[in-house]
Image (tube, rainbow, N blue to C red; front, side, top):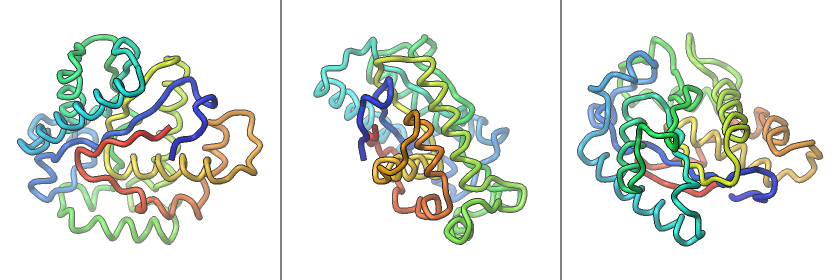
Length: 228
């Protein structure tokens, strides 16, 4: 999965939030105004998953000889992701309110649209089937896979402009993170793109044949991966 580190200023890890109260209740909570509510943070198991992920990240940093002052935790504003990021920061002994932890709204959950909001998570396959058919088509009132990728690339661009030589942990959600991995993998596999920058290469692979495959990169709750 990892691309040449010389193409980016930083090294990146991704972490899907731990098991949340919406996960436990079987609810789709994708609208920002609902997602930030404290009643939708981590469930007890999710806190444990976040702790384990923090310990694994700590081990990865040690193995790569990366000092803690070079760590940045960039997270979605949703309660479940902010809670996960806070637990990881605690494991690393980093102040969550300090300069090393930063919220990025563009890392938020994919908005599935009003007809899905607060409905059963058993309806996710309907949206994924739509993505497979046409990842540029939006569920009614919601975001397409391509919409999500566009804002993720904006977030990565901001991180690249803001940080240099850092280990960045992106704490986000299932759909956004599997889409991010999809384009990272495509950029690695498609060497024919002679783009001026790695970010331009990521934009170049934002095509239906690539984005329609994002479910291949699904993560479990609390799963940590090194990506680039």
